[in-house]
Image (cartoon, rainbow, N blue to C red; front, side, top):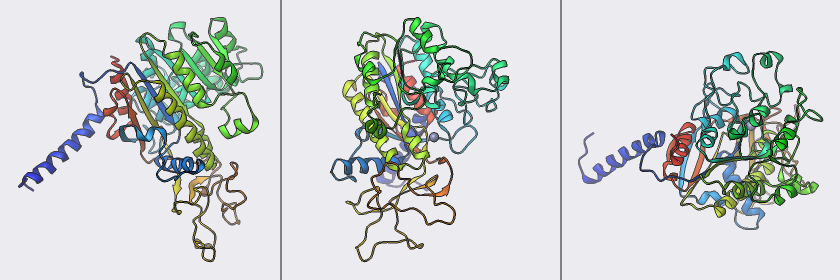
Length: 465
Ligand SMILES: [Zn+2]
């Protein structure tokens, strides 16, 4: 069809521009792009778009304001893209392959970290010479300070994507490895993090996972205490929220391990009064310490418990963790200058949470409202929860009616949200995730991207060769 009028012409031209945007997003290497002194990547694990929508409603309702028009802290960032998340071997990525694509620019197999797609999962010999450098390692080599913060074990897949190269994300300590993998020369993830020459070690590492670093009361079989070795080599080591808070800002290298495995969800930490830092406290301390670097820094912060709560059908907990994550981003945005710091907020993959109707003032944790005499019911005669999952342990037990939130358990953080298909741990889902950005290079976050494209935007903003 020919272009006959000026407006047709404009339309055709904007179509070309749109196609161009996709290409630009795929290869954003413009010499004239503004350089970022610092890059902070926030990964909300399992934080799909439906989780974001539900979390902003949950957050607003919890604060007594309208949920639907509420915004999470980063939803006001100027630049936005959708991001495809498939892995080298799967329509739906896991955290290992997803985070590896964001941190190395290369897709790998589900379950693998920092290696090419030529390996076989959990096969040590197949991973020989297949390591690919991560953005964090390259940044460190280029003289930047590097930090990693997570509410998971610091050896869990997403934080490990900054520093580890392994055909299995499960090899967090040597006890997790089959003897033939150890014999073939593969090294566990905890050792890959700390057993390095000083110049290659990260500057700030905060999260859970003590058990993977120690032998006494831990999982190490080699008799080593990697935390003691770290201290002996001059690094600071903290294990409580108070100790982290008290660290002087002149501290140059710090390891903080605040739980034997993953850290507690915020609601549990609060109820039990545990002296562990919140995500926002780890984030602000990391920035305070890294900001002293002469040549800028790269920091990755993971909100890991969004995913962990989704896996066990704890929807309100996943939303509460998303709000915690949003507060950490708000603090980071307030502490940094958009002129020199690129902040990107994205997810590694989504989760099968759905949001099925509800009046504006209905609690998002409840059921669809009608009149008292005529409440909406489904074909099984039962009320309709607003939030439901595709898969997970919240499914009805065999022969039993599906669970529905009631007035008495609606706010119970341990109440399972209904899942259609029973699984002990919910499956991740494969729809695109969002990416939000602010700062130098943020305008390259646009259109339909993929995870290696997000990597290239960060790399280009830092001016890494
Ligand atoms: Zn997961």
